[in-house]
Structure formats: C-alpha cells, structure tokens
Length: 102
Image (cartoon, rainbow, N blue to C red; front, side):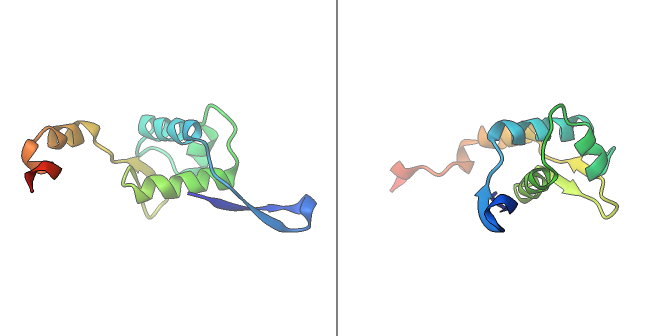
C-alpha cells in the first residue's frame, strides 16, 4: 500500500509514503456510513480530516483489494465487508486449520 510521491524540492527524486492505519480506518468508516451514495470525489469531501488525494486513492485501492469495497462503473463506492458473516464462519471449528492434527 505504498505510493510514490514526487518530491519537487529534491528535483523530482521519488520517495515512498504509506498512509497511517488511523487514516485507513477513518476512510473505511466514512465509506461504510455513506455506502452506495457517493462517488470518489464526493466521499473525499466528506472526510473529517484532510487527506491528500493520492493517499486517498491508494487507500481506496487497498480497500478494494481486500474486498471491503467495490467501485461501480459510475464511480459510486459501496462497502461490502460483512464482519458478522466473517465471525460466523470463524466460529465454525471445521473451518480452522489445526497444526496439532498431524
């Protein structure tokens, strides 16, 4: 989840920057709250803190990769993660790998 950011003061030298976990969680909460209602720019404007556009895009890409969100063809972002369903499956013992079985 790294992004390249141009450092113009260092004559175009590239450095890596990663969003903080707090920023990722904040954006995820906002997406969950407004799920299916807004596209990228509108949702970005609803964030309770300032986030660089490029950082925001990296976080959206990450959330999409881990199947927390989907972005429709018209750009609307929908939160699809279902923690209750995940908990239900994790509670089933037959779905766990046990190292001590062998």
